[in-house]
Image 1: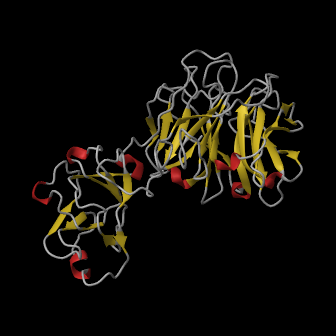
Image 2: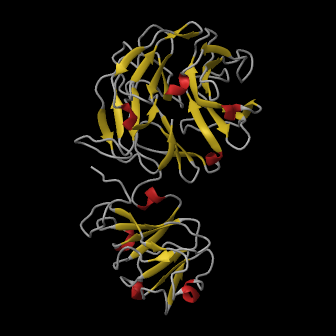
Length: 411
């Protein structure tokens, strides 16, 4: 499958090849005067290796380059978008595709990576040079026996939300499509989580922490088929930057409201924040883990994994890469059980996706980092699916897709 971008040498025969243009550092003489002629907000190119002579400039997508076809030798990108440099005309991807990163100041310039540029386009994120802004997500259309969990738009299918590197939020409904539900600004949030109803309307909601203020915001689901979110509500006025691994968990307090978990950075304590049964928000916190939780470098709340009616917790131990299952109890969690003996540190993130295969058992998905290797997929951005056994344990993972790279979070 896919080789990680930016590490591949482009060749004409490489399908969906994506590499970065070879930019030189600031002050590369003797072409400073000519390079500085490129106006702000434009992509510029020259037919010479040192950026002198007649200059080409544009700030719009260009399907064919006419007399400039296959002539770019030096380029600078003074826009705030990535410029995709296609060896094919009309933005084709049968040959190689190169990316020129945004550099509004115009401090870096260099070769385009190829002498065969035939078309170019401007995109918000690098992955959009060769792929949609969002990855494909598929889940079973068979109504699951465990309704609700992981279903943001109430269609009985497991859903996923992804944030791209431009700060947009996308809703993946389980049919391979993506809907834009946040047009920008989501990079201001340094923690995102969902699962469960915090607003009391029977729908799943989203919780986000604002990095600059430490405030905690609730974004209620509207129940729309598009996965749209309603107007946000402040549920934490500050101080939440002291907490790590904020995780919307499910209902542990028997009040039909979802609860929130968070690890206190300074102490390693695990706190439960119960959903407020009368207002949209959370109540007074309760200590459910007296320490040591800083040893866990990832938490996932996949819902009820063992069929006892309580939401459960999965945690990865950073030093060993082991995966632990913590069964939910009334108001807390029980004794842990080892469900992964090691190797789980090759996962960059965990997705609690509910019952994606429609067999009545909640499942787990992961997105890999550079350490992952399998016959089907390797490196960054492989989506690996683990079906639940109904006991808290997981079946062997199946690599499903290699195009979950170039994102800024999935949940």
